[in-house]
Image (tube, rainbow, N blue to C red; front, side, top):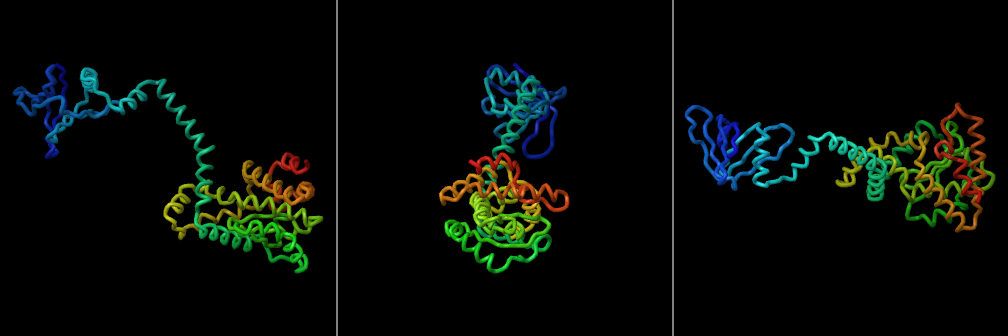
Length: 342
């Protein structure tokens, strides 16, 4: 026989009665009042009893078919009983893990590895999945908010003459035609504070500053930059970066399709485009895209490298007195340009 003390609840009221539970070898369960009289409160079979799993030193419960519940803090006695009955719960593993120091440390290590893997692989993968499934209205809102903020704070209307813009439009036309499904469109802005720069907005609009155009020695150099920015558009790098920082909010938008509250999420995008770098992965993808396009068109990839080195020298000369230039948002210049030199 195994016995333990506790309290019996009748399942109908909140009243509790101090009681003793006795389980006999034949499977009989007898619960008696815990006083000198020892009045019988409940009689049943162990086969009909359901046991709560052990979680640290919290009370255990025995549930009876009639709705009665017996509560006890004698976990050791209940464990002996369950061992004798050969009853196991999947949650017994939780108690095992929390009761052994080595298992606690192992669990912490597994948790840290899981979090690290989630941040390193899970979040980017989820951001990519969401970015390619967001409704077009969301990317339109992102682009409009961003361009509006840039026009108010950084850009001025372009000072390029109409002939230059028309010439570049003609030179860019084949690339734009090949990317018709991505809505790529070239805009020009005067951006003294950012110098020679180019940005790809989420909806496919790509902005060239006048300074970038003026620094280029030929139109193929600008075309190589356009090909790079087209890579960012094709792979939705801008949206993926924003989503990674606001994953939960974007998940709700993706699930519900409600873009009404999206604008607040893009207030920081102008800063991201002008001051923060893309990840190495995104830059490599955009570089490979530009390399593949230029080679397919028979255009020397060295055009990109020459323009980037020119910008690099400009950046060194103007460091500290302007917002970051094109190369500060596209890091590791020397490493990247080796691929374009080959």
